[in-house]
Image 1 (cartoon, rainbow, N blue to C red):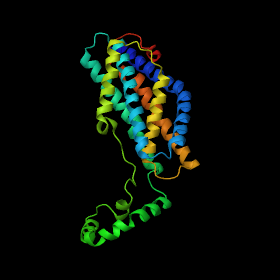
Image 2 (image 1 turned 135 degrees about the vertical axis):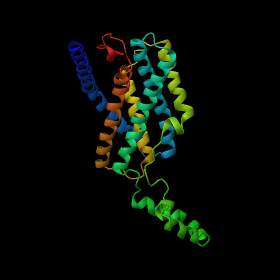
Image 3 (image 1 turned 45 degrees about the vertical axis):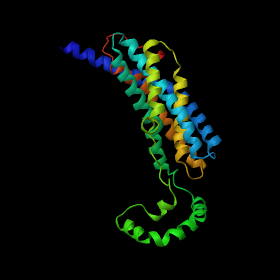
Image 4 (image 1 turned 60 degrees about the vertical axis):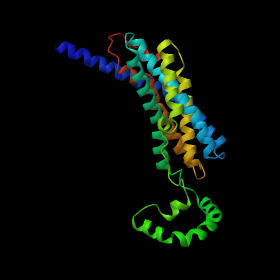
Length: 268
């Protein structure tokens, strides 16, 4: 019993060392990918949130598909007798869960902390000039309703005048379900029939980085200063570095029951 416990403890230590090694090895390329993300933001910062959303709808489903391929393939390689249903569940949860964390949730928290969604004074003034006539026309008709809304703690006058003042969490698998979920299924099918895809982890990182960048741009309503770019750089690095390594390496191995050596898992 003692020997069995020692053996399990040794295997857990080896897995932990391998995970830390993978994180270390992937950090340099993730830094490069983060730089490309900032370049994307510089190129598309003035095109408008609608176009940035469309670009997010390209890169986020692409990230989901690649994540599904890698996650499901790695699981199938080491659990060759696993049923399609198990591969489907592991691939879908791994792809959707990690891609949503990387492209949506972590960027959203970064946007909230950095305050990129708070418009500058010039934006507020321009918006007021455009909408002042409409507000004057509707002021009398809605004065009573506004009084009730203010007493009940509902949205303020500033938020009504400036929609989108807060960063909004955009969950792709819900709001763009018709793109994201089929992308996950497509990646899982590729993994099931062709598990040895050998798709480079580098491509996965780059596409994830671009998806995260356009999620930030969708919510950006203020000038991107040097200090702001430094903060975004840190947010993008963390948002892609940890989730992508977890998706490609850690997550599928959690479900592997095989006693085979997993030392070459990262080569997939």
